[in-house]
Length: 247
Ligand SMILES: Nc1ncnc2c1ncn2[C@@H]1O[C@H](COP(=O)(O)OP(=O)(O)O)[C@@H](O)[C@H]1O
Ligand SMILES: [Mg+2]
Image (cartoon, rainbow, N blue to C red; front, side, top):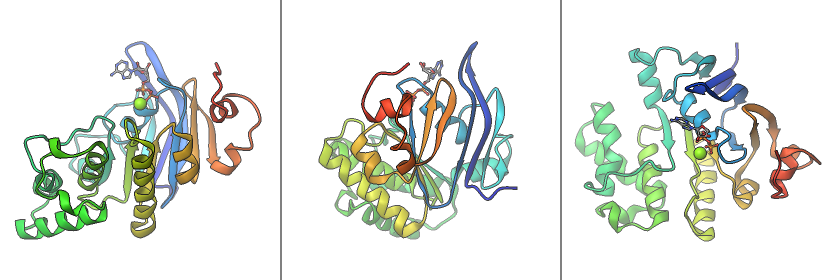
């Protein structure tokens, strides 16, 4: 038994005959900010997608809140997966809807809450991501940073205890990106949620990471405290922080 929020055991994921994840192990705890690192194309997005049930692993297992995600067809699993907030890199907002309508969508789809209450929650969520003024705007009217915050509000709509963000600061300027980091820290602080972030921005990692999961050649090369990761003197983890190429 384990009380990890997420645990991944010997996860193997293949695309055709190509093995991308080759026995990954990981365990994430409550209220931690976990940063997933590794070279481009090493399988970070694949790992996130496997954890949230979008990719079926070749073998191994994923548990969320102690429950194995085995049968995606089951009502219970799909209910639980709805409760995971996901901010994918290309997780576009719907352009034909306003920000408020985008944020209310998950609640309209998955709850029986009255519309008036949903509207109140939408306003609350937008305030939480510091975007109250964007309520009636269409997504085309938003800056890159505002769009990320709106998508975050939508990801938080169903009060998930677990939030995944895939390269949230990609394409953002450093100031906007730092603002997003501050927001993630605030969400963890106020809501106690577990946040799993893929990023390669050193500044961001330094700012937010409690723990690191470093993937290399399909395996977990390092799983532990950020402060410990920084003490590693050679090999791919050290090279990553020194911005050196490694093989
Ligand atoms: N749907 C897919 N079909 C085939 N190959 C894929 C697919 N998605 C990703 N890959 C490949 O798997 C590897 C890992 O991809 P990905 O998880 O996106 O890496 P990362 O997020 O670490 O950059 C890459 O080589 C990528 O080209
Ligand atoms: Mg990726």
